Image (cartoon, rainbow, N blue to C red; front, side):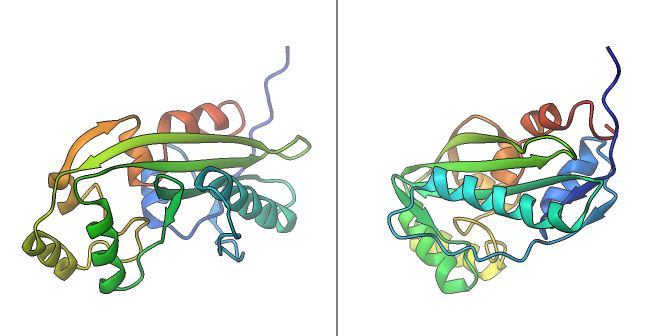
Length: 194
């Protein structure tokens, strides 16, 4: 059986965390190309379907422009039940998310989509369950003041100061950071320089 052809790898994401996680796993990127798609959730769309739709759309958009490259896209969603928490873009949004997550379990879902030239898109979704401790107003205020949660799904970064808020995690830690490495490497195996 012939070995699969190795393609240059393009990351369809503007997330510096994803690029650094791939580097940490020894995965070589040819380029990073942010996909320009509408990320607005559809009415009634559930978190899992939303994450999968966005990852697939990002991968397809970049693959359309990049003929002979392997394209990897991902989308991470923080879900509280059926509710999709936003990517917090203001201090107020970080505070709102932390108040919602305080003392509760939530899910972090990352959808992966890989386009391999000449093959069908491959997708996978990874779920990690996380519970934060009950946060006091002063803990929330101090965290908001760091600006660490700005731009993060659910308003917190587990790899930073918010790690001290986590009382329970079940599943992939790197998924909560932004890219589940085990599953990503499995999807890319044989097609990218690992």
